[in-house]
Length: 146
Image (cartoon, helix red, strand yellow):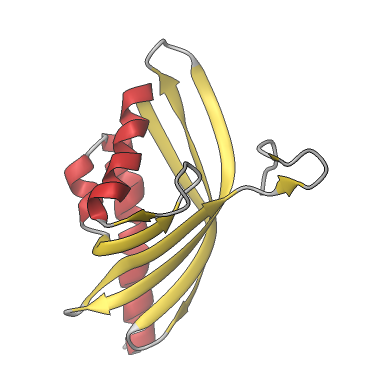
């Protein structure tokens, strides 16, 4: 019989899978469920923070404006799970076919998740997406692979 930690970790992994599935389906409603209503996101796009589910969904809606088809991949998701909070980190890549028909392999980013158990459900209360920076040029390095 699985331990509570194993049950919780499986539930958290399903939440990340829901993001992958909703992006591939271009399902904005489906993207609401894995996030807390008051999620704080440090995404790659300005501003420095995006607060609330509507702000987070606006970022994902922008993806759908540019992509005809979307592929989202999460690799090497590692989790540390407590009773009410958990955190994780992974690599993620958004790729697909742009509206103009051009295929793009996208870029790998680093993702950190902060999960909170609210009313028995694990949701993402915080996420941060980043790319390494070249200190000399001040530009993000977007051609690295895990």
